[in-house]
Image (cartoon, rainbow over all chains, first blue to last red; front, side):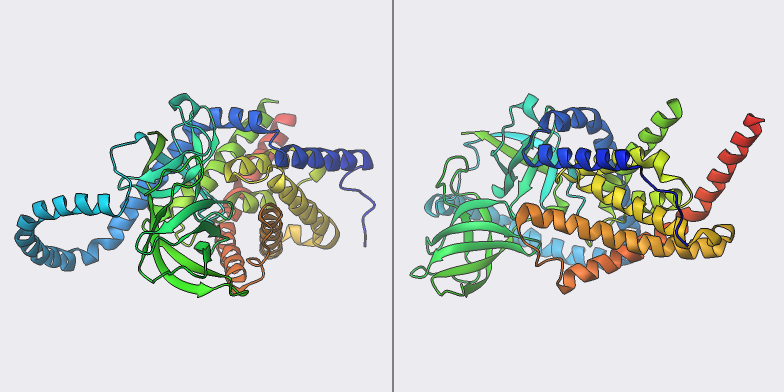
Length: 269
Length: 178
């Protein structure tokens, strides 16, 4: 029943085992960075072509799927348009009030930072939404650890790996992401961290502090690289840790990471 | 040499097709393992001794594109093709002459390969992040189940075209060898 033919000779088998062990060791200790850099220098045009063409085709397919909804949406939009025309006249005053409130609530002023815009050209293929790839890299002055935002000053992550023409951005939902944050309303401080495929948690909030569902959470500016006042999300749920020493809160991001197209890297102030 | 280079380049493109193009269509956050299915179909009929080096390239490209630990996919694909070759040689040699039976056998290989690949990937992620909870809860099992389903659909789509292409190249080689 069993064939005498071996799939690998002993010599070949030993070679493969040693080779794999070496690769794991080098990769774990980040010695393969030059290889990764070389790979991405060659692979970047292919990555852009495949990812962007996939996005465009997916967009067209979604459009075709939505055709049946168009008539209903059209009528709905006409009604909304009329209501918006009435509201429009109040918006100028609201803008002034908004700027004043942002100052009072200690949110980051939008124009203080030197921003580098980047297109999203890839994302985590394991489907964990842990990282995205952008088309800006070392050549554009990007450095590891730089915060990455979307247009309204919403923090989505930090730069993880930098290659010559591209970078990967570690999203807040990654288990390796740790950010100092605070509750805007109650000033309670904590650590924001990703939970493996389960979202974002604000942890280690002192039991004496107060957290309320619906409160907004921003970066606190403690630590070296992430400025204060960047919006992270809203509190969805609050609970005690099992040892009853701290509060924890589940944070809902303001942005859906799977729909990111353009992001901004904060290079300096 | 040229033929080998072309094959490796095709594998390179397939890796992007799987990890960059297909990624936009699967909103439930994972992608069918099209390379895995193609390699299983291909390797069930080949001598692994001669082709194992291509599996290293497959794994290498997928590792680079996944941003994870380099070597994980290399290890995974080598294990899967070892398993496929072993089972193919010892238990399923008779089925190679019957197309339908062969397809049935390949379906089993795809299921086993998907489970093995997912488990190795999870162990790798656990090793990096020290959290094995995900693998053994309902969400993980559901995801592996859906992945098996998608891979099986892809097997149906590629099995007969690959057989046709294979038959064409073997016919051509026999004609040229004469």
